[in-house]
Image (tube, rainbow, N blue to C red; front, side, top):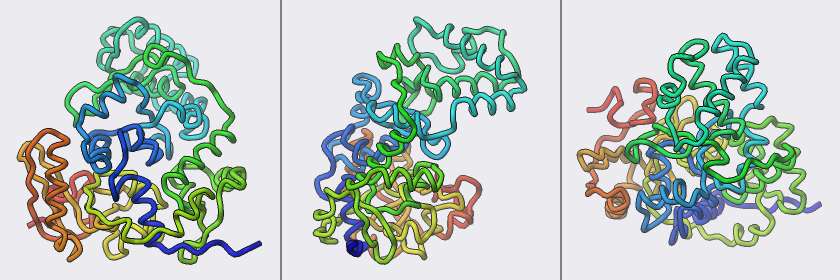
Length: 402
């Protein structure tokens, strides 16, 4: 057996930047962005900002059209036990089969936390589904009104049972009520919104398909990266990679064992670091920063070790980050009402490319329909210096901000 092909970090970085639309001309549309990243985070405003970073002519309505008019993309809880993603229809069977907890476990957990029996939870789920039948999308509050005062258990039973219905493919997050920054979801029956019920597939086959999609978006990547991203066990991760067979090849990523798709190997090894040049504004939980195992070593291709705690909190949540040629070069925060993007550079790489940053800020303003200007602020310390959830607003929530 020959030795794995050697790949440099700068090659891997530029290769992924090009694939994900963060360098060069970007991707060709919203659906293309979702495929190229193996899914974008579904929470607002991240979903819009992730598209804006990858599409030169993006407007808010472009994502809304794919979600609510064409309905070719769907919000669902999937990776790592229930993180919200936007994914294409053809990947949904695999995601339901091999990510998150098993439906029967969800029933047990829901019963435990609501004080109801499993039979009572299942009966309540049937009642909710019946109340929604023949109606346009409804919020949890509207479901509560439809059921009047006849609600079992404590106040959490309704919300948790709605989540159970989503986990089992009976209802779907269909629309959002409010602005592009809102996460107030309305729900519809699965078949009413998407036309056909979910086709079940075997978990092993699902894991192979999801591993394939992951490596196309993030490869070269390690088995540990895939394990972290999906939430699988070490055994299931290893089996999925083995079952891909000749579709993937082993590479040595500056000494680390990693995998890439076989048909990308020539392109990967022929990639020049300059192909990854560009400045981008990436939001909280952007796919580029959340695709690899959580540690300074696992994310070294994107973040210098000295900057790691400025970009990630102790739980591995990535904050809104400016990248220069694929490396974290600062953090940023949007104030839509004031029309500002406040930026805290980490060092000279961003300062020297400030003109490129201002171009990206103007492009973002066009995407969201408001004039924006860049404002510089002091270089930050670790996210841990701020209160809980500082990663959601890494500048305004900081305890040490001047």
